[in-house]
Amino acid sequence: MNAQMVKRRIRLVLIYAVLVLLVLLTLLPLGWIVSTSLKPSTEVFANPPYWIPKQITFSNYTNVFTGSSIPIAFLNSLIIALLCSVMALVLGSMAGYAFARFQFRGKGFLSLFMLLSQMLPLTVLMIPLYYMENRVGLVDTKFGMAAAHLVIALPLVTWMSKGYFKGIPREIEEAAMVDGCSTFQNLMFIVVPLLRPALAATGIYAFISSWNEYALANVLTRSEASRTVPLALNDFSTFFKVNWGDTMAAAVVITLPIIVVFLSVQKQFVEGLASGAVKG
Image 1 (cartoon, rainbow, N blue to C red):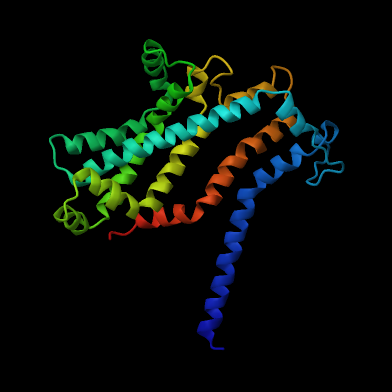
Image 2 (cartoon, rainbow, N blue to C red):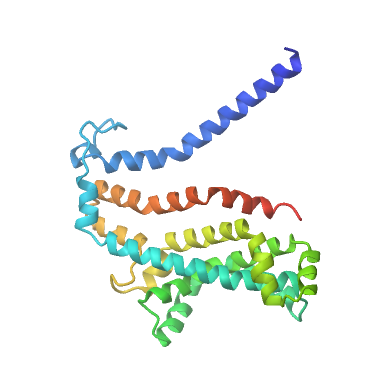
C-alpha cells in the first residue's frame, strides 16, 4: 500500500467521522424529545438528567390522542398541507414554465418581484391577508389556510420550477409540437413526466412549509375546525406550567409525518435537487 492510498483512506475516515458527528448533533434534539415523551412526570425534571427512562410510560401519548385537540389538528394540517402542495405545484409549475419558455413584457420584473416577496416578513402580510380572506369568507377554513400558505410556498416553487424547465432541451418540445402536440399537451405529457423527481422535491418543500407554519395560522383560525398542529401544541402549556411529557409526545406525533413523507420520496427528492444542478 503506497503513501497516496494511505492518505486517501485517512481522508475518507476523517470525512466520515465528521459526517457521523454532524448526524449525531442533528439527531440529538430529536432523541431527547423521544426520550422525554416516554418518561413519567417524576423523571422529566430529574437531576442530573438521563437519556434512557427508568420507567417507560406511554401515558403521555394516551393523553395526546384522547385528551387534547392534536388528532383534529393533525387531520386539519394534513388536509391543508396537501391542498397547499397541490395548488403550489399546479400554479407554480405553470408559472415556471411560462417564465422559462415564453417571452412577454415585464417578464424580468415579475420574476424578480415574485422572489423579492419572499423577503417580506409574515407579520407584514398578516393584516392584508386577514382582511382579504375575511371579505370572501375564508377565515377559519381549511381552504383559506391553504391559500394563505401559498404566500410562503408559491414563489420558491415557481423559481425552482423555472430552473428545472430551463434544464429541458427545447428540441424535445419542438419534436413533440411537430407531431401535433399543443403547448398544454407538451407541458402535461412531455415535460412534466421528465421532471417528476424535481417536482416531487418542490412538492415536499410546499408540504413542509405549510405543515410547520404558525404565524398565519394563529391569525386566520378561530376554532378547532381549522386549527393546525403548531397551534395545538399550545394546549399543553399554561402561564404557570408546561406539561413537558405531553408536549414532547405531541412533538413526536407532529414530526413523524414529515419524516415518513421525506423517507418515502427520498430518492425523488435527491434526484430533483440534482436535476436542478445541471442543464440537460
